[in-house]
Image (cartoon, rainbow, N blue to C red; front, side, top):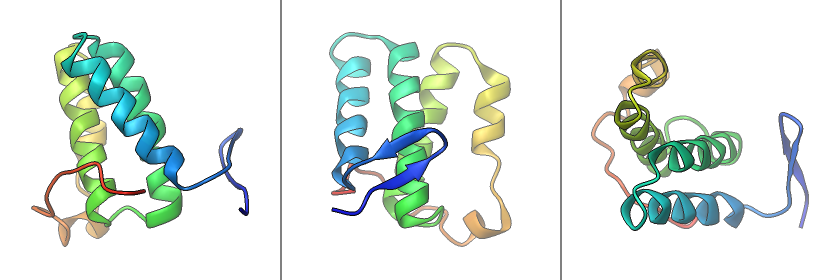
Length: 102
């Protein structure tokens, strides 16, 4: 598989985003670790944005989960920054949630 880079991290496979998303969800729901989940959702979001783009439903769902975690840990400034729709995001509002396959 062709490697992709996001920042200084090397992504070996597109399913990396799904694994991160699932780990984040488990951290949040099963263990109540919102701060840990936020970090994992942020990493998943970076991968999904690089692979799928910002408007894809899986990317939008991941951003939504990240914003929810940031609000849980009372990082309202970061939550507002992530939650601010761009011109590109406006057309994808209400795209739905879910882990998806990427």
